Amino acid sequence: MAMTRQRLGDDALRISFSNVTKRYGAVTALDKFSADVAPGRITAFLGANGSGKTTSMRLLLGLADPTAGTALVGGRTYHELAHPLRTVGAVLDQGFQPNRSARNHLGIVAAQAGVPAGRVDDVLELVGLTEAATRRVGKFSLGMRQRLALASAVIGDPSVLVLDEPFNGLDPQGIQTLRVFLRNFADRGGTVFLSSHLLAEIANSADDAIIIDHGRLVSAGPIADLIPATARTVVTTRNADILAAALQVTHATVERSGTDRLTVTNVSTEVIGRAALDAGAVILGMRAEGDDLEAIFENLIHPKELVS
Image (tube, rainbow, N blue to C red; front, side, top):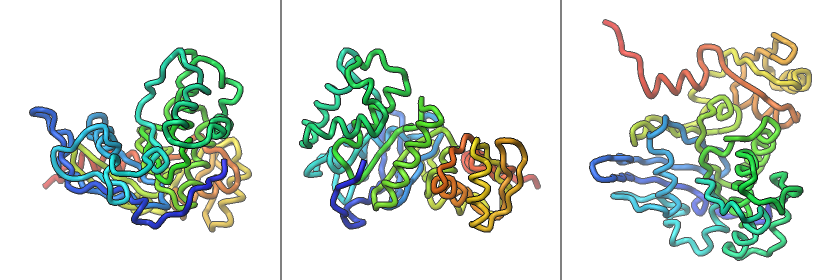
């Protein structure tokens, strides 16, 4: 699907959390949380269950009010946006009416967004649901509902995407298709803010990471700064020959460690991910030995105590 939106300035597409606190009675879900999400980048929002990720996204989308602080898109609250669904596309839950068809659901969203009804066919094709357009959503699998949620998010041709666990339920080909779309979306200047528990996928797809724990910011910055470029990265792919050839151009050291496995050194996971994307290689798994994102994430959340 070609993106036709007008290119806006960086400030208009920036997500900003400033000293955001959210309390539910005696429970503090967010505690003076501050972070920025830059346009032209894919920013991963990481944290354990209950860390405050979904609460932060709900505040950003105007589904709840902060106790203190602000959550803004382009310097405005969600409710202050002139055309919210044409500015921000969101996947936060899958609250579909089970007896409604995918086409009818998207028709309602298109009307709410104020976009032509023809957009429905565009997004159905984009997410691979054209043949299932007239089926009741209640009969959809988890992966199909996830595709429908993504279609709903992009139907307004937004400049900002806020996605809570967008890879859940997708098969490897679906993950690759979404990865390509998000990369192209960001490369054209859009803002992508997504949460995920699939840390290997995040290492492969995202540019930046914001890590949160118990409602407080732990770390924020480029993923490449978290994972050393010299780490040995084990990549699983059925397109090993294609990816190996693409990585040779980046001056990576590549060893074949199995029929569908490569061991790569001297480049970051971001370089590996971009090489795979450009070459059309589907990555089924990626981990760095000893310095992988999962180990780094765990150490940031639960730092090892120094032994004197």
